[in-house]
Image (cartoon, rainbow, N blue to C red; front, top):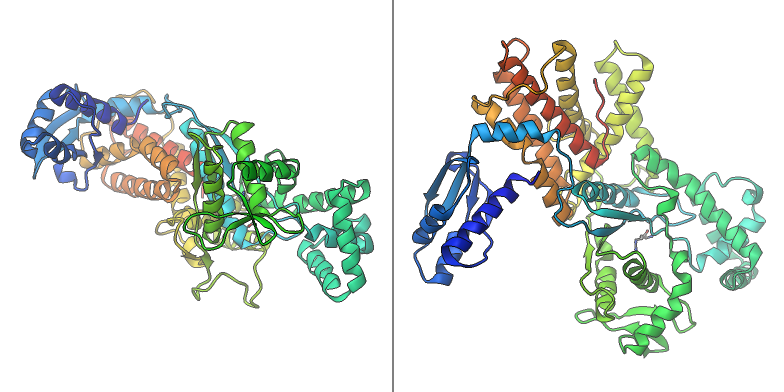
Length: 561
Ligand code: ARG
């Protein structure tokens, strides 16, 4: 089912075409003030200029050509030439009745979209820096999928580079050689220490890289072991986070090795890359430092790999849109890589989009660190979320079994961490606060989860109801709730376009708030039929919309809390 906005857009476009013989954007938006209506078109002012007419006159002409059928109960012109539309409650009720039988895709054309997110570095513990990329990227991937796009998740892990000489040489000499590496960070630190302190080890590390790059079996085996060990650390974190990244989504830096020489060669041939001080670089307008794609010793860099990845994603994966959710500190890197790819002609008709995010801060407004000043391991952070949530649930629900409480707590704890992140505009920094994110009041995961569970409990009390009961939207609370439920698709489209999950969070928060308004003012179970069933249907679509929205954020919604 097309969204209300899409239906109005089509009708307004047709009216403008009929009135003036031109194709113009009706510039529709949800009304800021309910007094004037539900949706507003702001097209008349611009069109008036273009046509040399008075805005009100243009608005009048659009209005008289407008055929909204039974959609609107009122169309009015206000101010300089705004056209306000009020939706008809009976029409809304019918839309609502079809909403649950209806499923995506919303997208008029299905796109192939690559989402590049998470990308931890091998042999390093994942830290909070990877948290944002992982959960924002995952939410975007889920929204795009629901939207109807074909999503290809790509986990661009850092699994290649000169540091592997050091790591492999250290592995050979360490106790971890024939067992699992318990602490990756520690393993890395020790290898680095040995490298810094021991000259003969340095020589060994350097020759090891050369053998690795030449594809020697024993070095490759050791490298693979280190990558596998790393996966043993980050895969459970994805699981705990309820993030849809699996080994098959991994296409690490090493994957692009065979393409690097050719990428440099192509860019040189096209005169995009040039020699500079012995290195091969791309000078990108407006950037002081060029993008280096090959060092003077022949080595390739992070940017070379990203260029190979773009070319591969477009040529082989046939991506039409490529999205990168990574730290805003990588802005220059992606700007230079995108420019180079476009200049090379690889990205004809392909959208390359960088969706950056700010820093996670501690309550002291400084980058989030542990009390001792160390970076916090993601695993420890998530375990703490579980523990804190469990304490909360124990307090609230002494009546439940341990097992029930555990499962609710893991939904609440991880949900709180994810929601606190997703609910802020990703471009800004945000303060990580356990107390705020775990609060049952305000725009938090527990608040939404609780709202959802509360509706579920209504059904446990209500028993049977007629799901196909006619819906009656006669009170302002019912009407407001129904209109908001019906905006879900519009919000999905907005998130799919802007890649900002906080729009969805705000929407869900408002939904829960509108539901409260309805529930406090409109008796549900105590009402007589047919009103009782009508209101239960409203409860039902609200619960489904809340659950569906939380699903898109990768947040669980327990049946009871
Ligand atoms: N491994 C990188 C890091 O930890 C992130 C990878 C981002 N993806 C990419 N295609 N460059 O910073």
